[in-house]
Amino acid sequence: MNRRSTLAALALAGAIGAAGALAPAANAQQDYPNKPIKLIVDGPAGGINDIWARRYANQIGPALKQTLVVENRTGASGSLSAEALTQAAPDGYTMYYGGMNPLVLYPGAGGKVRYDPVKDFLPIALGTMGFPTLVAGPTLGAKSIAEAIAKVGSTERTCGTGGNASVGHFACVQFARAGKVKLLAVPYKAGALAATDVAAGQIDLAAGFYSEIEALTSAGRLVPLAVYGPQRLPKFPNVPTMAEAGLPGIELPSFSGFFVPAGTPMPIVARLHTELLAAMKKPEMADTLANAGGVYQVMTQEAFANFYRGEIAKWKKLSADTGIRVDP
Image 1 (tube, rainbow, N blue to C red):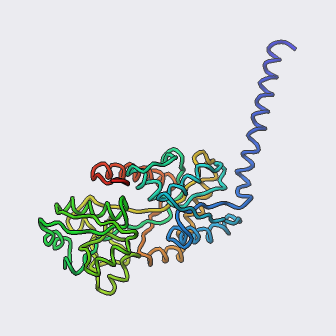
Image 2: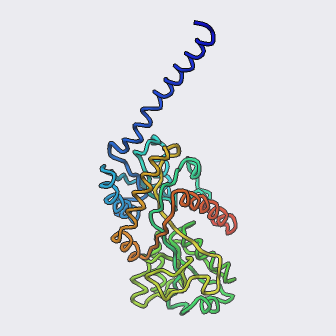
């Protein structure tokens, strides 16, 4: 065999070998999924993330013809749950549901984590989205944003939050900055506890989500002043947005979504995205979210990835601009 024939034979053998190596991976993607999928959830069993993760699992499990095994992880502001995903193989058999605290707020406000929220996580689909509402109680007696600004005046009033560096904390500080008033942010273990103290007259204002304030607003013990969103909430149709109330530019979305480890094959990501999007479009899922005061935005996988990266950058800048840190 001459030199040219030998080189040709070697090249052919290499091509056959490469094709053989790629074949199992291609077959695995075509056969996906062929075993149960682990779904790591940020938060305890019975928590809001757990409830939504299981609702999705009940929808997409039958569509994928596989069981989704929920594994709840808590601790370190959710960073332990996020870290668990980075230790999984990028093969589509481990997903993560969470996002806002461990991937955006905590690291953005200086929290120490052993992962990179951008490089280590591949976004699949939006799960839920909500926007906080600023509420006033009897000590302030305001019925609108304009009244709240006037009543606070040059004195320092209090604004309850769901904890240091929480969405509520940013909401209180952003309102104070935009309205040019003085507010002392008072951290609580949960937004609902802050709302209860506002209703009891212990503090003046609070920023909370619909599920945290609905019972007190319905009873007339709290007055919802404005929503930190681009549009009014379906459950608060008469409550203006901050922009409508005269304070534009302080929209603060809080979201949860589905992620897989970086490096997961895109055909698998596309399959999961398709099933998750189909699940949220079902009336029972959409109605449940609306009744909980949330909203849903239909996004492609690429759009959700861009939104996610944008939120990381935005909240990190907010932390720097406001001085809000995990450990002030």
